[in-house]
Amino acid sequence: MSRQAKDATGAEELTALADRGYFSGAEVLACEELGVTPICPKPITSGARAEGRFGKPDFIYQPDSDTYLCPAGEALAKRSTSIEHGLVLNRYWSRNCGRCKLKQDCTPGTERHVTRWEHEQVIEAMQDRLDNMPEAMRIRRRTVEHVFGTIKDWMGRSHFQARRLQNVGTEMSLHVLAYNLKRAIALLGPSELIAAMRA
Image (cartoon, rainbow, N blue to C red; front, side, top):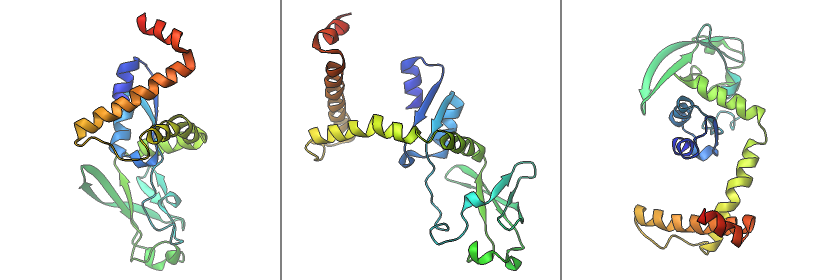
């Protein structure tokens, strides 16, 4: 979508906001490569925090040594690399977890493993941007969510009438066209909109 938006607008710089349901490391990397600045919260997939244990953010990556520093001050070295779903993942752990005084706050297993994607620095940079833009997701919600709520109301809070992806796409496109026309009329007025369409 970012590529299409950039092509359609001709913009040199573009920032793409998305909610956490759209998070994908590969898509974030693709945006960066396009020159688009992505902002999308990363979903929290680990249950460690919910269970009162240290989460991955409590482990600090040290790029110079390619290690993680755990909350107890122990260095977790890179021990293995694997490919999962097309992503190269490195796993870090220490063999000293058994002697650690904080082990009960860290892992119920023998060792605490931390996984890092080979392009994790892109995700970390995006998280830094998000931390420095606390209003970003609020702006996205104000800009986008009410549109879908309005369209859903027009549809009677019901399902699409059409079946099959192509037909549903056409139905949604008609809803969006109607919304955009009504919005343009509200902003410009009918006569100015007609004049703009004739130009």
